[in-house]
Amino acid sequence: MAHSHRVRVPQQLHLDLSVPTFDDLVVARERALALGARLLYDRSDDEAEPLYVLADLAGHPFCIFVAPPPPP
Image 1 (tube, rainbow, N blue to C red):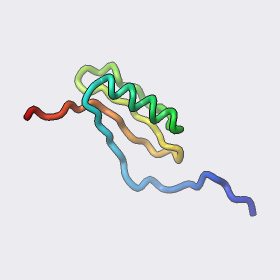
Image 2: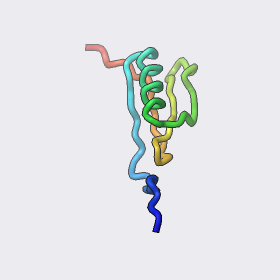
Image 3: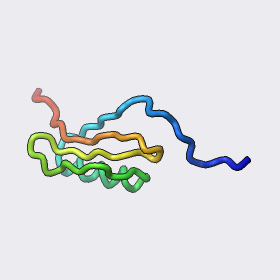
C-alpha cells in the first residue's frame, strides 16, 4: 500500500496571527508563502484592518493581520 506524504487532517482550530505594522504584514506573508502557504484572500488594502488569509500545507486557513500594540 502506497502512503501519501500529505495526510488529510481535519481542521482543529483557526489561527489568527497579528503583526504591529503594514510592513511587518508584508514580511509575514512572504515568509508564509516561502514556507509553502497559499494565499486565499488579500485584504491588505483595507485601511481599517489590512489582512491576508492563507492556507497551510494541509489546506487549513489562517489569517495574518495588522494590530498595532496598545498604548502604554
